[in-house]
Length: 393
Image (cartoon, rainbow, N blue to C red; front, side, top):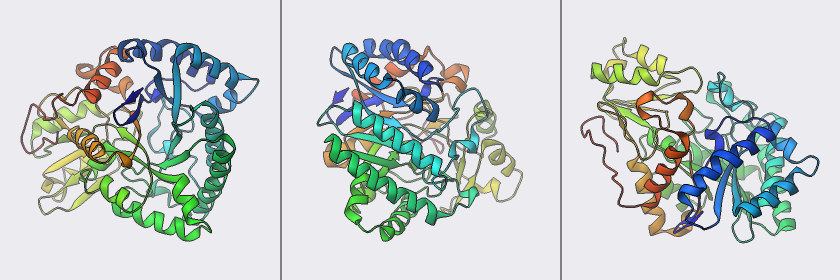
């Protein structure tokens, strides 16, 4: 939907769907129910998630034309596609496999080209089309960055030509994430320095490749929106899309905090733990079990705060002693209101509905609609009900 900052959708990666038939089934059931709760009669934007399989199937046998007709009948439109998860994203062990294939693999390049072909056909004139993707690779994979940069430069050339043909402003957003190939502001800036050094046409790459800024991910790095989003924008990097998402925060010195966080240890997704010590040092653990195990070491016991990569509904605080980082979302929206040139694509991305503990779980359409209301109403609270050392939000 259109709102004061541009275009707002929720990402359909919250719904299990790998084939195009499954994806369309989700859109025609769950997504339309959300639309009916929040759209208020205006055109409703869809933040589309397409697996590689679904993208291929949508491009075959006239499916894309039939989908365009359906969007028109339902008064819906697509302005963005989540191209981070390539394959299965629900009901199986995803963890670090969500980074495969990475940008070293030509399969990632071809998949992303297909997504741009799709979004160039679906996005309305004057809106622009974005695709989000992983931050090149996962640090533990020790990827060959030179190959990955070459693929991204090729993608920039492809997208630029497609934008000219379609008369649409098309752009890719690389999404920094804890333990990704680049994960914080400094690493992101240095990566783009290297990427641009490879390119014959710097302006083309900067026009077509930018940042998918995930509020949760930068909050995990203990960076607020002014020290991250504002800096990236000021450095001339395109902010392709902003993910409105919230992480968990807690004081690991409290036994009750550790007991509470165990409810979020589940086998599907990677839940990186970023621990901060009183002197400002940051320690990273790839998942919750490793974070909990670190408390048996002298260094681990020194941490005064944890932030945990588990997307929490924007409108719902976890029960004390846990807290969330949702204040970062509100501060990001406020920053964009002060400078609307930062970004015009926004997406609610709480994909963890299937694995939320019972106390935070509601009927899925009700949860998504409540998150829309929280985003659209600036008077909704930003302060966690349990202030203290663990509160971030």
